[in-house]
Length: 448
Image 1: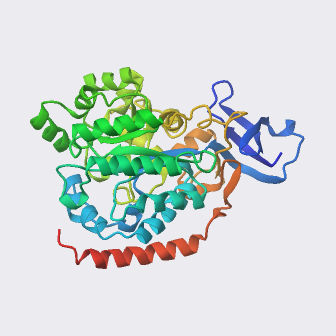
Image 2: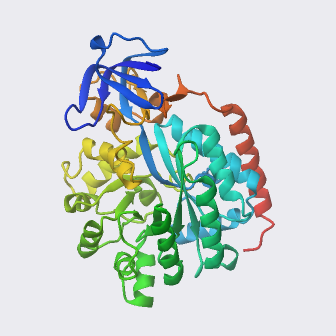
Image 3: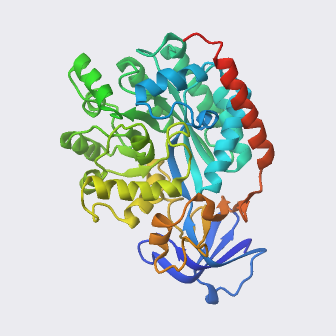
């Protein structure tokens, strides 16, 4: 074995043996070769990780973020979405350089890794330079995280500097797919992302869907995030967001509906029948006061729901483990029902459902022989976690990203004893901080 991890608990999420006590995981190359009791694994690994007092989980999937926003943490607090965009995100975004984007993406990538997310979907939509998205992908490549960058765009309603013509969107998206999709033995992926049905024309979204179908890549769309956006579209076309996406034939098994806060029972049925996925971002929805997505109803209807942190300017971190607790507690209190959603369900949202969202359920999401070796080890000897009666409950309700000790992606240890092994963390924090301070000063000179 190349790598062996022996732990108090191995939470496999597999249907036959979901939790193993005193378990072990053996890895050969980039695949899992053994899952079982530690005392039955006689073979030693070239690398042995002693995880006594710890638990092993499948790597988490952060299904929606905007990593460039790490440079904007803590700015524009206590504002609703549209005011937040106009007063903070859009002005600062116009001042972004390629270097800013690169250092932000590196910091965002290692933040995700150290918080237990081995896979991240980054929605990058700021194109002050045509190579901004390439810099994000390069940062993901260097960090060792499994990443999908969905290229976002606007072509209407928003201020002119952010609009792109659809020919440019298609040309650049195709270039990125051809140059980056599938690189690093499949660890890097590319998708397309009309930003919202309100900010994108039907023609542009139809062409984005054509790209998704042609190349088999995700179509990722902010949908029904706020009541105001839904009302604006109803006033213009007489349809709500999901109704409209169904009308123009954008729903389907490669489509990600991000947020889905303001949807009706009929729209939930449309999502379920079409096989469309939903990405739930509970912290962002609370932070911006957007509302509460009807996630328990979606789950009961058979909709695949994944979990995201959203960007660091509306969270203000990318701690997927913290989002587990927020997701569970938000729906318990909003439904006045402690059984509305369970710890198991939110953990599945961040693992099994996240893998399914990307069409990677055969490779990711559970700890089983033959699957990709994307794993995290969580130290449960901490005072705020111990004693552990149930490792799933402990992860969801007690832990946070700082409790992640070891992270493995593609069989490679990318975080060991909370230290990133792939890049210089101290340098990245320093460079990203310099970029952030410079960005704020430069943005003051931009008239918006």
